[in-house]
Length: 464
Ligand SMILES: Cc1cc2nc3c(=O)[nH]c(=O)nc-3n(C[C@H](O)[C@H](O)[C@H](O)COP(=O)(O)O)c2cc1C
Image (cartoon, rainbow, N blue to C red; front, side):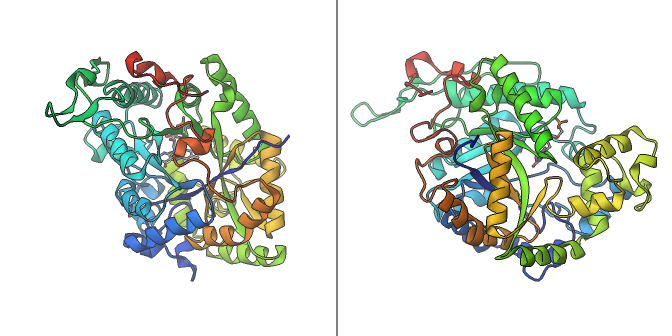
C-alpha cells in the first residue's frame, strides 16, 4: 500500500567528502568548494528548486583513527575530515531560500544542553522555523580524548545521558517562556513580562540547569527531533522522543523489521505510531537511460579508494579493518566483531561471501545504505517500491559525487516522481515540522513527551 508523499532530504557534510571514498577525485565532484559560502547558497537554491524537504548535515564530534591505529588514512582520503561546523552555514543558506529545512547533528555527549538549546532556538528564529536536530550520542574515542573527558562514557550510559540532555532542552524550549511573554509595552517600559518567564529548575544526574532560557520562543519552539541510533537503547529513545528516525538498513526486509519495531515501541510509549517518521539512507546514481546510469556507476566504482572506505568503516564499527586480509572472506576470521559484520552483509545477500574489499566497494559509494542505479523511471519505481513494501516515509539521499549527484537527481528523477504524484510540486506550510505532519503543525504534537513541559497557561491547541 502506498505510504503517501515521499519525504526527501539531501544528506551532506561540511567537508570535502562525506561517505564516499576516493570520489573527491571525480572530475565533477565539487567537495573542495566546501569552504566557500557561495557553494552552500547555490546548493540551497538547487535543493529548493527541486522541491526537496531539505538538507541534512551529518557531523562527527571526533575523527576516524581506528584503521591502522592512526588518522592518516582518513586525512589522506578526507574521510569526514576536515570538517567545518555545520551550524554556521545555515543562516546563509536560509537567507536565499524560503522553504527547505535544515537537519543538524548535535552530540548529547559533548554539547552542553543549555548552549545547544540556544543555538537551535537562534537558528529556528533566523530560518523561520526550519531546523531539526539529529540527536546523536557519538561514538568516536577521539572525541572523548579531545573534548576533555578522556574516555567515552559506555554505550548504554550515553543514551541515559542523551535522554536527560533532551529533557533539559525540551524544558528550555517548551517550558520556560510563555508564548505571550514578549509584550513590548512602551507605556510601562516592559519588553518582556517577567511573570511569564520561569526557571526550569532542572537538577539531574548529569546536568544542573536551574534557570530560565535566555531566548524567546522560536516558531517551532523545539526543532524537529531526529534520531539515528539502532541499538535497543537507541530505538527506545527514538520511539519515545524522535519525530523522525534515520536508518541505514541494507535491505527492505531489514528496514521493515526496524520500522515495525520502532513504531510498536512508540505505541507502547503512548504515541501515535505513524507520527514517528522514518527516513532511509540511500544513494541514487541516475542518468537518462539504464545503460548510461550503469556506466556512470562503474566510473564511480573505479574511483573507490580502499583505505578511505576502511578508514570510515573502521571508525563507525570501532574495529581496525587493517587486521584482515582484504581478499579473504570475513567468515573465516574468527572474531566476534568480524562475525557481526559478516552478518550485516550476509543478511543482504546470503549466498555471497563478503571480503573486506567487497565491503569497501559497497560502503565506498554512499556509505552503508543501498545504491539504486538507473534511469528516472527505474529509480522512481525502486524508491516507490521501498516505500510501498516497508512503510518508510522517505529518503536521506547520500551521494557518490558531491553536488552533481543531487543536481542529477533533481533534474531527472524529481520530475518523474512529481508526474506520479509521489512528490509534491510546490511546498505546503513553511516550517520543517509542517513538512512532516502537514500545514498548521508547527509545534510539537500533543502526544510528544516534550509537550508536558509546556506551561498550561501557554498551551495552544496543538493539532493532532
Ligand atoms: C543512518 C545513521 C546516521 C548517523 N549519523 C551520525 C552522525 O551524523 N553523527 C554521529 O555522531 N553519529 C551518527 N550516527 C551514529 C548514531 O547516532 C549512533 O551513535 C550509533 O549508531 C551507535 O548507536 P547505536 O548502537 O544505538 O546504533 C548515525 C547512525 C546511523 C544509523
